[in-house]
Image (cartoon, rainbow, N blue to C red; front, side, top):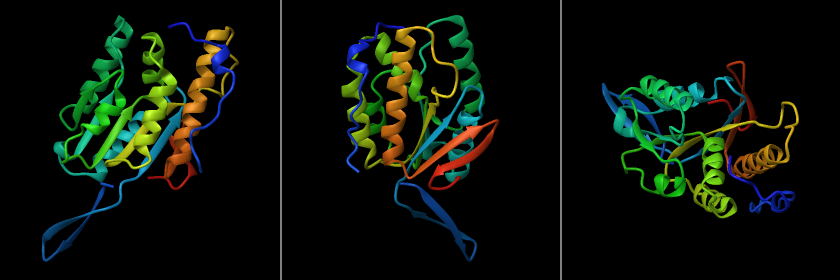
Length: 212
């Protein structure tokens, strides 16, 4: 992991001041799809909690056809374990999503989604945050840009993120700083999300809004 400026990460002031989706009906055997207002959903959970599967299953049920759903994957194949994880996720998605591999410029990836996309899964934000730190990018600037964009999402978006604050306190200062930044990121995004869903042992719990 890249070195984190611990002094600058000890306090947090939130930047928060406070879609495209569709539904189907049939008339005389003709399917009619009606656009709904785009919504933002934050899907939280620990490791192997089922958060990625939950977001993916929702996207598959909420839209029809590959061109109507996108998957922004943030992982980088930095070692053999990560390569295996990425391959497993790719196999699971198969050809059911437009897949966009973007480890750093998440804002541009979301802005560049095709007009046909009704629902998009971003998986995952904590990996993306780790990438920013590793490449020594301005994390505060990138997070502010993401929050600003997602206040008016271009389509129905599900953000997958790890809940990092429920386990043991990390033993070293750098890991504790990463946990703090990830927690603040989740708070900022939860504040602008219509739904916040926590996955525990594969079971969804609505912290805000409703279970999808």
